[in-house]
Length: 272
Image (cartoon, rainbow, N blue to C red; front, side):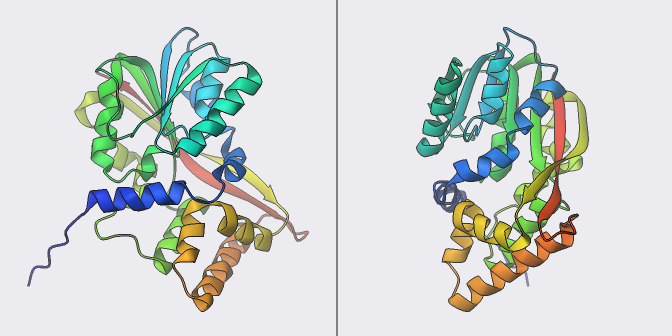
């Protein structure tokens, strides 16, 4: 007997939008701020170039590119995150154009940008293939696409898988950490790019304790917060316990605090 699963991309997108509109991602975002500089260096960003940061969030990559004198646009579909990005740009006196837009339907002509970035952003889209097509489409021939995505086996990848075990995603939803493997990215970006190169790296996080990490993420990080809201009291307790155990597993500290490395994949591809 063959069982057919209907994939409702609009429902997946709706749930994801609710997820990233919840919590206080600005309190989480500072943990990954260094990735902006990592991506700019990975693509060898040149001053005066046109840059698009897709799913910019609070603007890490966009601001890093603007500090290198790029002509920068950042897009996201969560207005509250864009408000934070605009405030950060204003505080530094950086000229960045932030727009509300969907990563799966970028409002720009073909071949517009010299560099197209996304750090921990497009990996959370509903339609992976459509989002990848859009990255390639708006990049000019010879331009570079720079991505940073959590790996499936790294700390955050393991955390996202843990959350999915407690609260299964909608039918047909693909794991965001698919973007954290070179094989999948090669398939997603397709024949429109060449010279695709990837390397793993890690960002070290330091928090007061594994318990603090669990409570902090359950309060502020959209995926863990929304998952917890869907659980019973016992389920919430079990999710918290599992988050603490995961943090303890990765912990390098021996003094009661938490020191752990969050692995991600950096990928640079050149558009044909």
